[in-house]
Image 1 (cartoon, one colour):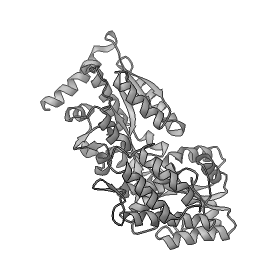
Image 2 (cartoon, rainbow, N blue to C red):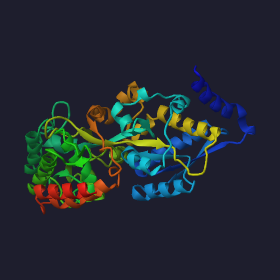
Image 3 (cartoon, rainbow, N blue to C red):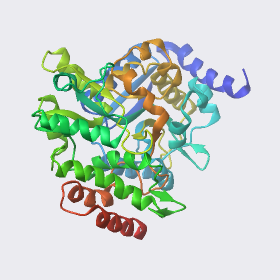
Length: 423
């Protein structure tokens, strides 16, 4: 064991050896997790606290997702009142680094956590890295997937021998499957969040990625043929809407309701809805269903993903004690090693030894779609990107009317390119 390893191990050993007589380290925790994954995170926190009774206690608070969360982190860190640890979207890391609200994760930290950067998929680790420095520890990747009603597709003769929807390998094939569902009398072959451009960014960016398209190259948005690739992506979705193959002006709750009620045969949504499906099926109120990687509409598989990660705030004017940091690092390391349970929230754990385990490989539907990690694309590395960021806002303005047949895709792309480059 080298000197750095001994330092991390000694700090943790001091916490353990001190026992009940020493002051328990309280780790103040903020997250933005609600719904099914929020329930599971609360269980993980309870399990951690039980396993570390008398040594470390997590004091957790769940705040509102999106802009409210990140605004509170920024203002709190500026006055030294941010938490000891927090969940953070990988897509927001570049902006957080620019704002100076995150502490870097050092080599000594990795060793104290008992983890290694090599345990993580390179694309996922790169998503939390800025200028060669890691600023958070990925906990998962959470892509979008294609949910499907096995009962409806089977009745329409549209399931393969493997129990998957037909036509996943081409634009023509998948469009034919949607049309066959409509011809079969299904009111909504596909449920899509067409009233929320922020959400549809995920689908549209995935379709750009299937063409090797990029939003930003050399500091310019939609340069070269990337504008054409965005137009291609928008055109496919607009055509589906015009043909009545996907729902129009549908918000997020209505999209989920269309699918779970059986009115829609398929749905594109995040893996975080897996608990919704599993809980409903366990209660006997849901049909047979599955989830799989997005269909290949263009050249090759590609799926947009983000990552929930653990970050340590840079509290201005407040220095974290060695004992507190040791406790925080123990939290992160323990969460990584116990993230198999997190997979029941639908997410794909980022820690390799978990996703490579036999237990994970046996999980369904996770095992069916987890292969998409080889085809993931993350947000462009810019402070303008990320959840609830300016890129989302600009593109959302034009996505909704385009997807619902009120704006020409070519016109939308030109407006988007002009506004993004003005930023």
